[in-house]
Length: 254
Image (cartoon, rainbow, N blue to C red; front, side, top):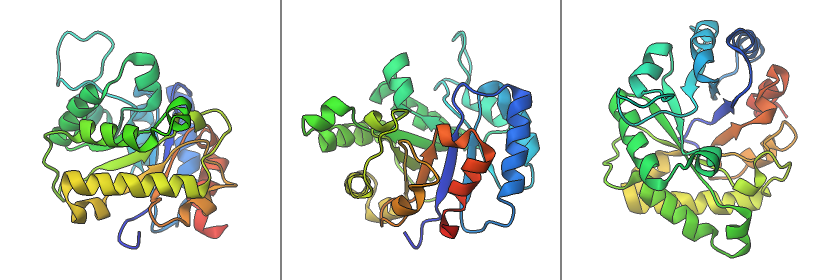
């Protein structure tokens, strides 16, 4: 991990009005001022992106969309495109989050299309993968991860100038209060990196950041980050409070 800059990403999901998002982002900016060696990302709702982008301007904090359509424009009511995200102030986008897969029919094929579109627009894609509790209990964790990584990146020629971030989210640990143990998370991250190596080559795989997502809190971040293949966190509920999120970002101080 010495060559990979940690990333702590806050996914605010369907929370905060634009005004609330701007205020919270300003607080995060103030609380983490002076922190070095960590990339910070905030993913507000679509309507909150301009307010957050304005609040964190000049700070280095990355603003992300939570989803996007793969077409640049068209008759897709309710969708948002990569050019729209970029124009609103985002430089990054979360793709294939488990909630998108579970509730909105996201598939490995649509994830693949969205990763392609994000890279073409110059957005940093955060591609999410992870198994359900049933799949883990059935011993299919690695099978699921292999399928999702391969499917999401099928036919895409990755290059150093177009980086990718992967987020491992065990579905059974999202919003449940359950957390994969650091050893469980490390095992999955190491396997994902091996699969990435088979898809994009060892050098790029070793340079790719893999984040852990699943009930990350100030109390467990340091132990997770001590693992070799855990390069950061995709934080849900604990990112909604600026003070809690800042403590996670300052994991080295714990």
